[in-house]
Image (cartoon, rainbow, N blue to C red; front, side, top):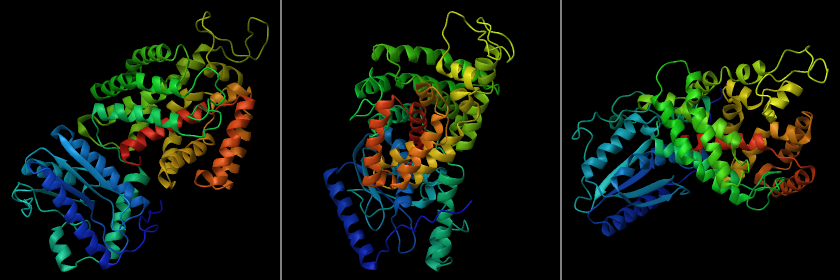
Length: 489
């Protein structure tokens, strides 16, 4: 796989820029220390060698670590937070915390040592009563910071100029590629953070607009029975369910992971009941309850013992959890082709489950077209999440809304959307959907006015045709969730 050049989209800085930024940083630190005279001030930036010190990819690195560091400090009464992400000399952040200097410094060093990207960060800790005093790692019982390239003492390598700038930049490019691209690393977050990330994912999908045929703040899309407020109520009702899924994964013992799925299914049914309760019986998030619940439980399992799992490992757990879904939920409930149903029609699959319960859309599509739907996606490990969703989210530029719209449309062509098929009545709609997405991309995607206008017109066409990309919307939620945990959002 090609190594990403995170410096390619940045602008070079001059020595004068660096010196001015240093004065600015000192002024910010002094201001914070004066206003919070009994607290500790923490200044955070990246160690980026060379002339280019900021770019979209460099900002992704910064926010991945910044959010994790803040979460590590969340129990220490954070009093002030400020971020300057767009500075030419690189993103920087400051926060004030009501803890002793030594305690905060130790936590910062642990972050630098244990987080995958930690060695790229430069964290200064100071107080008003000792603004010039810097506790050394050795004084606190830690080894000296190591070089990015040779693992020797970093200060000695810098002082002697042992490595040239190009070698250091190549190493940082490799770190970025390893963390975000080849097999994304997901830090080991706590239950509260995971549940809030999942809730954020549901809310972020709901408020992104314009989404063809889907509910958003501007349009109800092709849904007469719901609006944006239905989705807000529904999203907020699910946070406790997300916590239960995470806890089930973290505490699960054994390697028969189909049992983990069985463990969370009762919670899923209860969550569906809560959803229907707050939406007056409208199905807003049933697919999300199923797929996101499984993904959260898989992440909980994969991150046991405070491990930071790779996305591929989490997806393997998802696949193992759903290994019997297609067999148990679909194949065994329908008789083999060639039998005769109650109407005497041969070559149709006959439902062998509860005769009093109507077939779900997924079951009906398996009967009619042998499509395995979301069950097949789970059994396959939710592959479009990594191959399309996160890739598009990472590579897209612009506002969060623009990036999410591009990601939604890319996902629409990578899955078989059961909602689209149900509403259209034929899987052939997938071919037409691919053409719509190609036209959207040809017009410049969501970054361009042409792309935005096309989405708005497509939304109107979907409303007229009663079409909705519900499956793609569910995948967007999964992508936002993992993007939040890895630092892409």
